[in-house]
Image 1: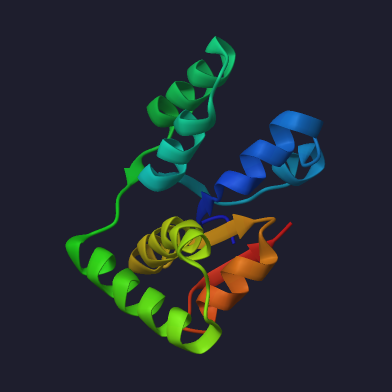
Image 2: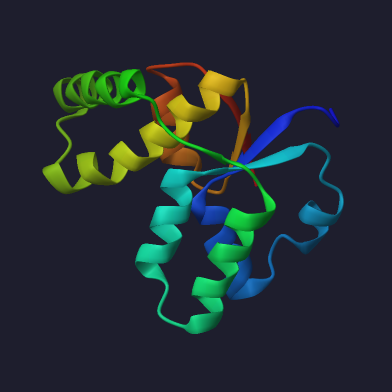
Length: 136
C-alpha cells in the first residue's frame, strides 16, 4: 500500500491539531500524500493564529495539490440535488456536504484514498458515488 495516494480530510487535521489524536496513525502511514485544494481552503478559512496559517502553507509547499475539475463541480451539484430529494437536508447541511463531495470526487479522479474522521458524511457521499475511504 506504499504506492496508494492519500488525501486527508479537514477533520483529520483539525482533530490532530487540537488533541494530537492521530500521532500513531501518522507514524505508521504508508502512501503518497496529496492535498486537496478544498481542504486547504477550509483550513485557511478557520485559521485564526499565525501558526495555523503557517501550517497550511507548509502542507501546500510539501505535497502537491489536487483540485476539483469542472466535471466534479457539476457532478457534485447533481449529487447534492439527489441528496436533497432523498434526505430533505437543509441548505446549511447541503453547503457542508458540498465541500466534502468535492474532496471525494477529486480523490476519485486519482484513485486516492480519503482519510477522515467524518464517517457519517463521507459514507453518505459514498452511497452516491464510490471512492476509497478510510475512517480514523
